[in-house]
Length: 216
Image (cartoon, rainbow, N blue to C red; front, top):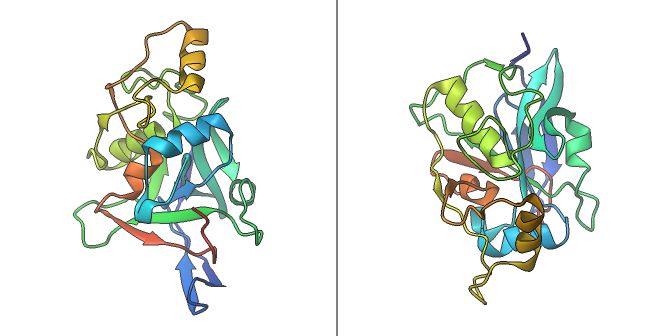
């Protein structure tokens, strides 16, 4: 069984005010990532917003695998485990710092993150290319939603109607039209789902910015 055990490690860095800030890796931390992936990310960013209006196109979950920090994430090849350094270095700002913000379930909530998180039911599952919350495939935000639900027995994050329309034109983004036309499936406009930005705005999360500069 694939299980990940909790331990902590201290990281020091200078953030916005140049004051020293301590961030401690913890099992179950949620890593929100600002990616530059062209028209897809542009479309996602235009209809979603995150904590303090930050733009996030991707999200993963920090886990510990035999004293090695890794990230569980859903990408095009499915649900995978990615080394933490690989994840962080995927998208950097002009100063070479990871464009990643961290969310952690607050201690003041009734939600308890287990010290052991079992990823096995999700590992190697296919990517959910049609964004269907009810199939046995997963997109990045869906993996976060389902893994936390599986681990805690609670629906921690809220689902909301999805949109693939440009808020300016009220028409479907061309990139999404091409995408769904290629798949030959119905556009899931208005179907229940979630995105990295909406998760980052959850009242249950305490937000950390340990990587010194976060570019919106």
